[in-house]
Every structure is written in C-alpha cells, then in structure tokens.
View 1: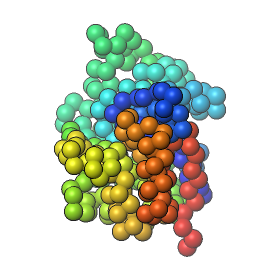
View 2 (view 1 turned 120 degrees about the vertical axis):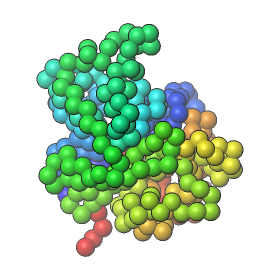
View 3 (view 1 turned 180 degrees about the vertical axis):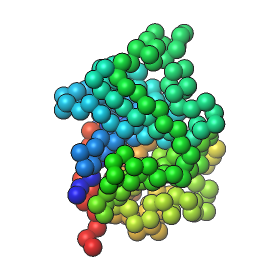
View 4 (view 1 turned 135 degrees about the vertical axis):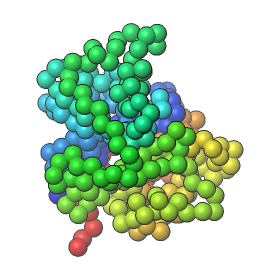
Length: 278
C-alpha cells in the first residue's frame, strides 16, 4: 500500500545546471508519484524531460499530470516530454487556477507557438486531455486514489495537491507565500496528518524579507507548519537557483538541527511512503 515519490526536478525559477549544483540538482519542478499502478506527475518543469525518457524505458503509456500553476519554470519542460509525441500514449493534464481564463490548453498551446517555439502543440500525437477545475475539488485518477486540492498564495494563483491512498498521504505544496507571524490556516489544514509534505522552501528567513510578494516561502515556515500539523516528514523543495550545493548542505543541516524528520529534495531522489501505523 506504499506511495513511491521520485523527484525529477527540485529547483525554482530557472534551471541551473552547473558544477556547483550537482548534489541537489538543477532541474525545475517535477515530481513523480507512483501509486496503485498509476503514474501521477506534479508539474512539468525541466525535470519532466528525464522523467519522459524513464517512462519510455519502463513502457508507461499513460499518466496524469497535475500543475500547481503555469509559470515558466513549472511548464517549460513539457515541449521536451518525448512520450507526448507517441500516438500510442495518453495523458490528462490538470490545472486548478485557469478556469474562466481560457484554460490550461490555451497556455500550453501558446508556449509552443511561433515565434517562441518551432514545434506546435499539435505535433504531439498522443491523446492529450486538458482538464480545468477550481482548486478545492477532489480528483480521482483511479477509484481508490484521491487527490485533494487547495488554493495557494501565489501571483496568478496556484494549487496544492494531496495524494491519499491506503492510509498513506503525500502533499505537494509549492509556490506559496506565508505572512510573517501568521499561520496559513488553509495550508495547515491541508497538510495535517500527512506522511510526507513537499513544501516551497525557496528562501531563508533573511532572504524572505526582501522577496515579500514574490510568492514563495521558507524552510523554517515549512517546519513550523509540519510540526503544527503532526506531519511525518518534510521535503524542502523549489530551491533557489542561487543556492549551490554548499549553501544547500548548510540549509539542510540547520533544518535537521531544528527538526529531525526533514531533508532537502534532490534530483532523482526516491522516497517510499507507507503511512502511519493504525
């Protein structure tokens, strides 16, 4: 009854492949969740390129893609998602922030339109289903898998996701900004009791002071929320591209000193989630 989580891209803002970003990785947001024979993909940043190659290797022809939002760093890997060009494959693409604004298909089509990209969305010969919803709805990619959703505090809107299966739960809460000294009750209620929370930890507290309004949070706020919500583990996520391996190791060490069950997500890291004993 386990949920398998694999991180394919853990950076925010822009990909940063360099010798200084080897340990933690430089690809932007993409997380794969394997549960009950289903493949759920969260965000389509540059990490989805390597995920696509792995799906081909594994013979996976169907997956559900859930987008937090459609800022570039969360969708610019999709044109390089090779399985989408195979007519034998099918993918559902979900977004919770664009209902009434033309929908997610319009955004994906614009991303691959002239003069900014040479290959149109129509070149993807797989069956693509674009599904717009309003954050707060519960989705069911399979009858026994629930994906709860919640609105997040981010410019242009964003959606958090909580996967529940067989008593285990994983939350994907990135691109959200907290108010200093206040608890985001929506996020706290959403993550309460989860086994693993993947949380927007872009900034340190000192960096956050200069970035208010940019739509991101801190690792310390993630710890505060997870402690209050009786969460099993916290994955620091959406790392600032200016945080090289040395900086990330220092942040991870400081976070683990403050609270034991926390780690910094890395590209290609795998985490098995089995739920709490009943």
